[in-house]
Length: 123
Image (cartoon, rainbow, N blue to C red):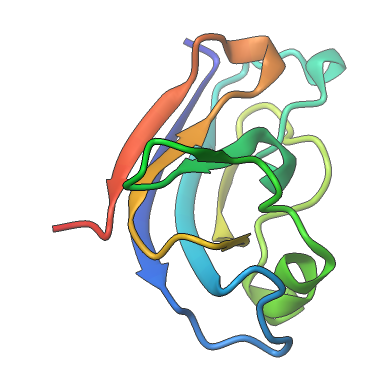
């Protein structure tokens, strides 16, 4: 294993500096640990572009990485927006802008198929 990450918290209708374009801001808090084996050439980092939200109606919302989502959180709260380094620890948040306040959050980065899913609101 080259890296571990944990979704520590899902916050629906998070307080943001910018209003949602789609209806609901969902803030995700992550912890990330990388090992010495992480290949920096993969340029892996957690980014909103790799997320989607499947609503209760079964429709997938892929337009969650809006300008409002990027401007939602204080820059001190963000996960790094550049490739993670080997043998490092990170914690921070990203925001997703969705029309759904509940459903299934999906994370599918190209280098780690098939990806992960989390129901929300978390119980």
